[in-house]
Image 1 (cartoon, rainbow, N blue to C red):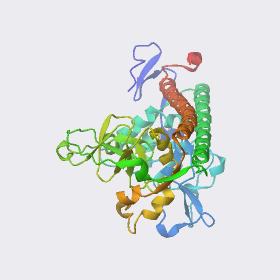
Image 2 (cartoon, rainbow, N blue to C red):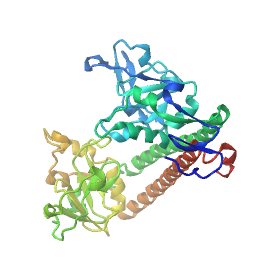
Image 3 (cartoon, rainbow, N blue to C red):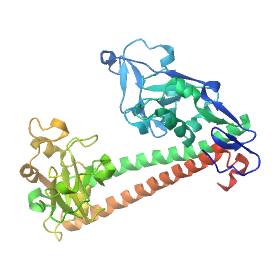
Image 4 (cartoon, helix red, strand yellow):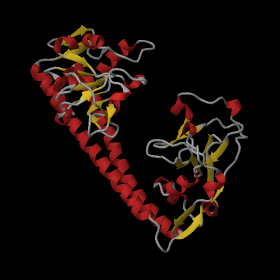
Length: 414
């Protein structure tokens, strides 16, 4: 509940806390209507040429709609389960509680598409303003109050009862316009980041593509295996995330392996590499990462760990980019034995892994390639930080505007 305005003149106490005297508090059911989505069976699923696309939670990425993970169905879709431009699509049921309530506004290109049973749409003449409310902390608070202890779902009846702040028409429009400026800046930065990612990927492929002068070696010529046991009782247990690299196990799984059973784990040191044989999205043949953020870490013996034999001949920095480029995938696909995908784990032996052949340049060329790729990577990181700053700025401004702590005529300082 917002107490910031409690002692300011011109404010009143409401179910949402202290808001300006000239604002109202409305329930969602008073100013619009939620609609439930389409229930379909596996038999209804078809290909994109014969069906209608069903929008699901996975189609909402941040504040945008994505269409990389789509489902199409061939069945009768009632009008109530079709979206219109201006509708707000909301996730109302999901195995992950944190995803409940994530939302996005539907644009013209999606008009007529269906939406799934774990989703709802909210339709209102005020959706320009409501789209900002649904992305605010106020809306998340309402969701949290209604989820309960075990049920990861909010119903249409729940949504209808949610309280929202409701300024005058003029102020609603001004608030929406101000926050839309941040949305547009965020979207442009996200688009630039995607272009830089594609550029960096192409640059990596170009620079790391084998050249006639490069030498073909086995991984065993360059690296030696690390099987160092955790005899020092180190408790910094990490796991390899294909997207994020080494992260603490407690952060990844929300649990920690008991310290008394860590003696047989491997202990790796900063600068050493580990190959995780588990496949994940974008990493069909596993991921090889370098330990950079910790001096030492404990990993499962399912990983294949290794280090450079001689850093006067080869660059660990270069190989960090080399492994990330996917150049090992062809070789890995040949040594992953039949049945190796059981439980998401590839059947790749250490012997076969170190027998893989790679073409690489001499150390001076390795350093030159690394410097070029690192420069490109640093540029990408700058825009990723800029995006994080914009998102944080919008979050803070949204909280102040939607609580009335800052009125629209006070926004010049932002």
